[in-house]
Image (cartoon, helix red, strand yellow):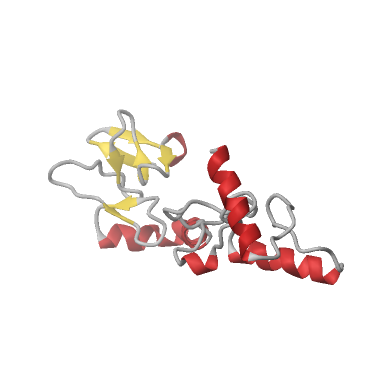
Amino acid sequence: VIVLSVGRKQSLESSNIDDKTSGVNVDGGQMCCASCGIVATDNVKLKKCAACESVRYCSVECQRKHRPDHKVGCKKRAAELRDEILFKQPESSYLGDCPICCLPLSIDPRNSPIQTCCSTVVCDGCEYANRLRQEKECLELTCPFCRHPVPTSNEEAENNKMKRVEAN
């Protein structure tokens, strides 16, 4: 049972725990201390649990008192927060994403060559994987994106580029 204000009591089970607002919500959306139930006001500032950020406390004493009840849930939520940060996909680069593996293209243009047949920029990893597959299976070298044969001379590569320029 938590005390919400003078004369009002509410059980912790009937309160709403909301991870988005990081604390225990009482009627009206106000935040209260997870241990003693004091409602946050101008005079009472609640501090978040540093590990899980899902509950708030009015004092260090309340945090210590509530620790045994909160410990298991806190460790679980803290691990979830760590995983979110750790496994978050990187933002796309200004060059966009590789059309094959959908990973951001390297900022260094030497690591993301443009294909002369289809004018597509493919990451170095997809280019390498395609080349390994072709060498292993003794196949003709082709573009990893459109499977068009790789030009054998610079003149042929320039002709392919000019065809793409005229087409666009």
